[in-house]
Length: 200
Image (cartoon, rainbow, N blue to C red; front, side, top):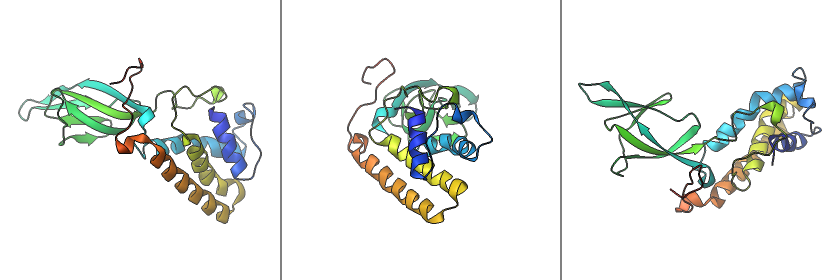
């Protein structure tokens, strides 16, 4: 599955023709500009909506002391993290009282291990290479969810058809709920995997 496949599904759903890689270079075209305006945000909406079991990463973070009086540490959230699923301290105990501000976490502990939904090998999208296979292990049906999300976002700009926009949005909601139900994470299924391929 490629980004171009997902984009073309959305274009067909709104009643227009699929594009080639060359066609995506015409930024003055209404369809092209619409796709580029919404495509990445559609991925972000979908990825952040659920702890997708096949897209979980884990990283140990070391904090920097910010205030010696209150003994508080600040941590950089990994750039590829779009949703934090769990946070544990160095003793393997889940940490409940974490403050999050922007791309930073604040805690009284100096080391944290976080599990998160990662955008690695999915985002950002490089439009010169959208016809290449997406390297991430995308959960089943997630490509359809993203294409329907994109279709519902761009259809009014392309056709001004509000009824079709409502129809596509409803299809997106149903597809998203089905994808969540089919994901094993909600019932304690698959363990997250590291980039090396070993279960954590």
